[in-house]
Length: 408
Length: 228
Image (spheres, rainbow over the protein chains, first blue to last red):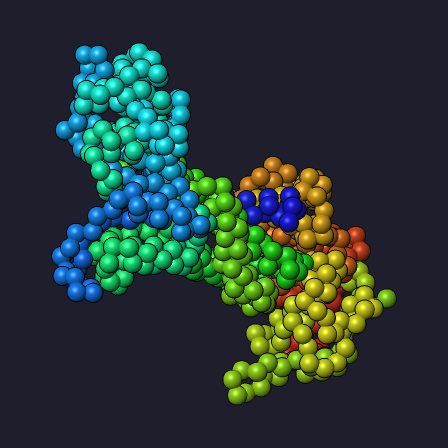
């Protein structure tokens, strides 16, 4: 393979036929270019959607209230289902396979937040400590709510960086008292959330919210994470939870509208499967494009062999072995394919790098072709070069010098 | 010592349904150092004979000994090896590789012997010098005159130190003055001990060889020892 003379032979041939070589290489470069762009875009889409999911825990399951839609045990349909602390306690006690269970009670926006002379309207969400994992919250400073805060109904609040910057400006917020509807809450932590919307809020203990703002023991919804459950297991958990609620709230467990369950495990897995599918699809298209390139190269190499019949005949007459002729054609094919492919690779990656900063959106992020793709593409190129050169090389080796030299 | 020895050599081609019997039992002996011309009209089988002698083509029956080695049932690789080491070809249309300069063309047989580029180019320059073409070493074939091209081709035939040079109408594409120059060159090479076989249909060319063999319908019709 590293016979310098052979390469010099090939380079001198390529140099003497620049246009032909360029045309040969172009189809391959184009194929690889398209493959990289497709794979990069697929990756961008995947990154975008993955980020959307990762704003919350990807294994979270959310339970929301609904209205019964079928009669059950003499009860009329259309009945509102209401969640209370009972639901939280019962779910916690009877389901050992769930983690980070948290109730949620929204104290809506009309509640004003103020610190000194600064005012603002933000979502006041009262929760259990499990919400930290459920919302995939990043604590910047201090801490999130804990069980003691819940048990003692402490008037404490975790605020987002956005809220802190709006109300406290440059002042240190930790330990200060933030007034929520004129009631002072002690700031215990600063957090950041991947989602813009979720940064427009503060978290307080659900027990404190019930005592101070809503009264009673009602909650809006429940959420928890399903550990390492796969899609099927998560559906089982979902079914169990639904059955328990049906039993407690007297509705038909097949009534899909009495409560709503949003199963992110299943959704996430679905999306990941979708992307695996897209990746395979893109590879099929890409490889198809490259095969078109290979056929192009093969075609042109066949013409090259035809064109060089006489030259090959001369070479054979002066002592070239069939192997050396095969090597010559094959290596030329591989050299052209690999070089052209590499150019396509660089152009593709370059274009992705270039457009990447300009196409960031919620569902499209960091289109990129990583090292693994580059390596696979390189291997693919060498294989394609060999394939493309194989038939022409065999044809060249079969040339009989007398036939080649006769056409005078 | 017989450089070339043919005994009862037969060769025929299949052309569709017909079998064309070209060589019909040739017997021929050529000593080492001879300068022989083979004459014959077209269809006499002289080209076929040259192809067989040059191991470019196989034969059906009989024996062909080259330098006392029987040439039969050779693999492509083996045939290439013998062509490379034993035989130098000179063609009517020169058959230089158009995208290689004179020096590279001359050096090519050594490439197939695995000689390094530097070394083979140096040897090639030596042969070009003998041909008086040093100044033309870097020129492409299409920049050379017919006589110069043929001299490059002869240098290429010589570079691998062959036992035999087979020349197929070496002057066919040259004017008469240049033809004579080329013949003088071949004679000079012959004097160094290399056996030369020239296929030609020109009488004045064949008269400059030592021995003239007339071929007709696949057999040797007559044979003379030339006057010079």
